[in-house]
Amino acid sequence: SETMTAADTETIVQDQEMEELALLAARQVLNRQSVDLHPMMSPGKVNHTYRADGGSDRVVIRLNGEPHRKHEFHKEQWAMEKARSVGVDTPKVLALGRIRDVSYQVQTFIDGRHPAADDVSAWVGIGRALRAVHGVPVQGWGGRFDVESEVFVHCWEEHVERCIGLLGETDPLRAHGLLDGALSTSLETAWRDLPGLPVGLSHGDVSVRNVLLRADGQTVLIDWGCAGAASVPFADVISIAGEHDPSSPEIDAFFKGYGSSWDEMQPRLTAVATLGAVDLCRWAIDQRPDELPRCLHQARWALDFYWEGRPWRPRPDSPA
Image (cartoon, rainbow, N blue to C red; front, side, top):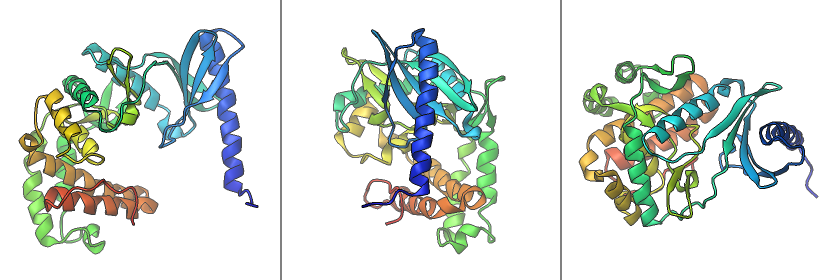
């Protein structure tokens, strides 16, 4: 028989605590004591997510106990409101706050289905929705959001200049075998044009798992936890290309909905993708050394596909 580890026990206790807090939030919003709770865990399991049924009423409860994410639900609410202002369907936030140092958000329940990954008509709708989202004006850049000023706290131009400035001979990524002198020089040349790119609202995690189709076919974008101010349309296209071959029918359908093409976005798409992949490795070195092998593996994938033009394959989650 398997022995339960301390980590297993901690997970069970945490799940029980989160379920208790979800019930408290659901009872308050639905204004009734009798509530049925159903787990709706996302693959990434960043948040604890539940559907709460109170008679004929349904809501979605999302909770997160990580202190550094306490403002994330506010950012999501802002992003979804901005998306709806340009005609993109999203859940509405009914309540948010904190219970026992755990952040919670209550959303309207969307009655819909996730499209299949190769659903061409769904990808046309996703393209149209993202085109509208990318037109939302933003201040600042990045994923960190100041709730009071409604400004993303970093600057795209400064970020690009910083990335370029780190491509010197003392670059630690040379020691890790990711870059060398010739590649660094070529990347610097490619990145020099990036500061002038437009910055707009980005969903940040475009996938069929974050899309729902209503009965009438309306496209609903959900899970805005990775939303931010980014170079548009490139950041979201790069996210999509991690899971879908750009030559596939679904991506062709996406670009038809968006009103562009993969070829039209080159070479800036390559420049943004490589800058992001390299910068993620630098983040791992500075903040999460345990994540460095994964980040290096993904950066090599990005350089192979975008820079070297090698055949597409799905972006790896971890080293083989």
